Every structure is written in C-alpha cells, then in structure tokens.
Amino acid sequence: MSRHSPVLTLILAVCAIGLVVTLVSHPEMSYRAAVSGLKIWWDVVFPALLPFIVVSEILMGLGVVHFVGVLLEPVMRPFFNVPGTGGFVLTMGFSSGYPVAAKLTTRLREQGNLTRVEGERLVSFTTTADPLFVIGAVSVGFFHNEQLGVVLTASHYLSAIILGFCLRFFAGHTPITRPLEKQQRSLAYRALQAMHRARLADKRPFGQLMGDAVFSALQMQLMIGGFLVVFSVLMEMFEVINITQFLSAILMVVLGPLGLPEGFSQALVTGLFEVTLGAQAVSEVPANVSLMWKAAIASSVLSWGGLSVHAQVASILSSTDIRVTPYLMARCIHAVLAVVTTLVLWRPFMTLTAGWISSVPVFLPNTFPSTADVWRDVFFRSGATALTILLILIALSAIIRKFTVKRPRYR
Image 1: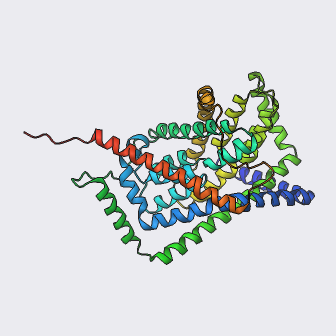
Image 2: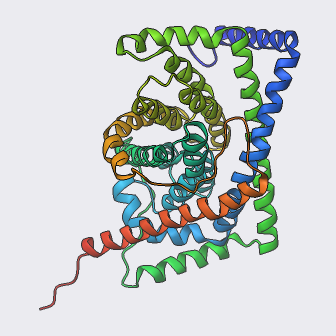
C-alpha cells in the first residue's frame, strides 16, 4: 500500500477518531497515564539526557568531533565502513542511550561529514540503551539481580557491535566520504589541526555556542517528553480496548510450541511499544521460568527499543535524507542477535560474576531516584563509560595503525 494511498488515509483517520473516542470515554485513565509518562520524563529521562546533549553540541562546535574522527579513522572505516567521526557518535550513543545517536548523526549529516548511507549505517547500530538504564533500572530495579546486569550489558553492546560490522556491507557500492589523506605528520598533529580548522569554520563565540547547545538540548528534550506522554496514554488505551491482549494471543501462537509461557507474549507486545514497560513485564513473568530465558527476552526488548524510541528517532532524522526503513530493519536484527548473544554468554558470565556485589543504586519499578541522584549517576557512571569507550577505541586505532601502516624500505 502506497504511503499516498487514499485507503491508508482513511485507515489512519478512523484510527485517530477511535482513539479520540476512547480518550473521551476514559478521561481519568488517560490522565493518570499522561502523568505517569510525564513523571518518568521529568525524574529520569530529562536529567539523564540533558547534560549529554548539551556537552555533545558544545564538543561538535569546538571541533572535538573532527579531532576524534582523525584518531578513530583506522578503526571505524575498516570495521563499520563509516568515517572516523562515527566514533564520537558510537561513544556518546553507547554511554547516553537513545536517541542521542540519532541527534548526533543528523548533525554530522547536515555538516556534510557523512553520506546518506553512512548515516543509515551509523544510526542503526549506535542507537542503544545506556548502561545506567540496563544495569540500574532493568537488572537491579526490575530483576533485583546484580549479575544479570553484566550479562545484559555485554550482550546488548556486543550484539550492537556485531550488527555494525554486518552493516558495513549494506549498500557497499554507494560512494563514501573521502578518506583521510596519508601524510608524513603524526596522527595526533593532524587531529589537532582538524579540530582547529573546524573551530575556525564554526565562527560562533563560546557564549553563543553554549546558548545554542542548551536551546537545542531543551528542544529535543521537549520532543522526547511529548513522545513519552503520548505513548504512555496509548499503552493505557490499548489495554482498555484489548488490543494488547489481541496481539498477545496472536504472538502466543508462535511462542506456545516453543514452550514459553503466555507472560512472554504479553511482555513482548508491551516492549513492542515501550522499552521500559516491556522490560518490567519480562521481569514479572512467573518465577518457574528460567532466568536465562527471561534475560534473553529482556535483552531482545532492550535492543528493539520500542516504537516510542523509533518515533523519536524518525522525528530527529526527518530533517535529513537518512531513511528510517534501514534503521527499523536493523532494530529487528539487533533484537535477534541480542537473544543469541545472551544465550551464548549466559553460562560463562554468570560463572565469572558469581559473588559479585554491585554498587549500582536500585531503581525500583514504581519509584524513581531523586533528581540529584540521577545527575550524580549520569556524570560519574555514564561519563566514565563514555571516556572508557573512547579510550578503548583510540588504543585500538593506534594498534591497527601500527600494524597496517607500510614502513618505507631503505636501500
């Protein structure tokens, strides 16, 4: 069915009218759902994402992205078939979570640092959950199991890296951004030179740069908050008109022969729309189900991300020519890879982490940490994660360059 089909227009109009009627007939439930979504945004999402968005905008204006791009070109180009600037997106995306990677990819595309296909590759595998959410909210808060956090984190990011390597072959015949020219000068000197040139090209004074960064971050946060409220209300209305139960019954036809309980189908349907509620639903599956399978399904839900996140990503990418379809296909592949990776890593990681005690604060499903606690965890935990990822990539880049650069032969 074409996107311009009158039948599609009629279907969307009927669905919108039906939703309005449901909202009007259940005003109290829709209000409670909207307040719940707003509370999640204000108490958790807003303080967790705001500093990363502001800092990333400032770093891009100062030319740090170009500095990192030169350093990481030896890693990002052969492994993921994207320019070195993609390393900055990978670092910030992995450490701060969705949809920051989409925002940074959009900025790089608008500046001409990425081709359309490179942007599609990059946003597809760097859009992930942040470690604070995976460990603190899901593993400790929902499952009350510190060991599970190690398995979920490892499987989530390892499957994302595997996905990125697979996507390097996506549309491989298309043009790429011009690789860095080989020069006699050191890599560090060229990185500093690229950063200085980018800063001069930006031309904005630091005060204006910081103001623009805050404005852009607040604008994005309002968009994210709106989507959270809308999808919270939608999930509640779907429960009222039994759409969730209907989709769960259909999915159970597939999961039933595999011996999986009905609770998994309900959790997957919930996770189809919203990742936090989906992960919580998986943790509430009856205790007689193996924890390994619970972890695998939770990892799949985290890697899928939910239609709420996808709507945010689509809204951010709409200002560029980057297509959403490859991103959605990559989300499906990531969900499958996460299940396989979790099952493979389960036994060795649970054995290695036996007796491991976590200091991650408990984020209970129905309670939220104070705003001060969230800000502290963002700066000290997620910031440390970003720095660690960046240092690993730089070290890997140096190692690859050392063994791949051809040294001149002397006679």
